[in-house]
Length: 481
Ligand SMILES: *Cc1c(COP(=O)(O)O)cnc(C)c1O
Image 1 (tube, rainbow, N blue to C red):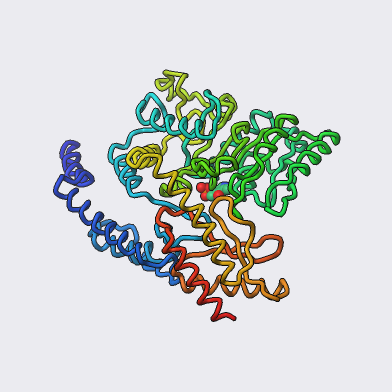
Image 2 (image 1 turned 60 degrees about the vertical axis):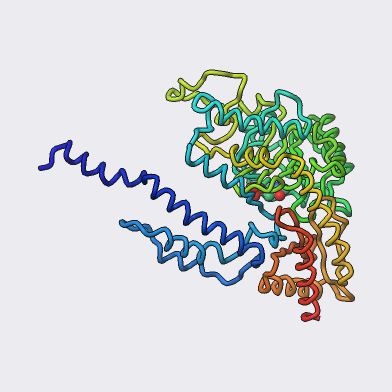
């Protein structure tokens, strides 16, 4: 029989392998860096979308008792993960809402993981929490919210919306029998994550009114006001309106100022979903669109969209920090050492998470390294590229939606065709775009019409990529005609 000490000694020899020495670390890092560089090189010229799916090759890499060489793993990763589907790191990602992936953000993630600072509570790491709070405070100022508002970095817009909706619920005391009489207002253009958030927050049974949109697909404010009035006289409890600052389908901003003022009059919580569009407020010429956001109650904004960060970085800012605390604050016995301060919110007190990714570093590093000015210019460039595309795609014979307010254009080929036929034509065209894949475009259905969408928000999209998109559309259109 081994004694205890001998057994521990043997286990230690094995478990120390989890902490490789410097030379091994360097060689791992070299391999990963070599891969990253060749990926970035491929991405400059590579496709925006690859329909061929080789992800099944991952089956060759099940979790196994023995370790595998890094070069084999990177090869497997390239084949199964890098190749198929959309390349969101490519400037050719021009569908949905394009992603980002700034290089210094990856370095921030690297350091966050190496140092593994705990960003959930101030006591555990004052610096990490302070950094995240500073970033939230910067976004608070950006949208002109008053001092004392609170914000938190979360995984994305969906969770940000959930946090905002939950705060609205608790501020309005919508629980129990109050749920059935509570009314929420949004439009057909509201992002579907709102519906998910309502259900998760236990508000699936509220009355949900879809307010009509105008020709630009913006919420009709007269309609909002008259519907709220009617609901009140019926003895219902209008409590929440959700507007969009950058809709997913067409990238327009609802009339925030008017919605804020109606919200004041009728005591509604105004939540602005600015997940996609929020950072365009940094562009001087576009600031006016956001007028009134400062009078709203909560705002969702996604740094992994408008700040070009990698996926997994959303944010929500809430005017009434007490409402946020009411929803999320919890004092557990085993957390008693952490309750040290109250002037600085810990993310754990105002969000659903406890142990969490230190997201702040991937946001702080690029912002500080590059400086804000470059982000303003890049966002302005994306807006102008959308205007350029809107103009050029008409020359190809496409019908277009409204001139882009931010960076989304909808367009369809409709020459002399009845709706049904033109829907089929545009459907065929988008399928051809996907098999081609030089750039990735997407489509949507608005009022029963199939539209193609062009959305530019990747920091790697410049005029040359837009010209590739136009060239591709021209070729495919001619082939289909
Ligand atoms: C992207 C988006 C969301 C969802 O955000 P995720 O980060 O994908 O969870 C919500 N609302 C709008 C308007 C969006 O553009």
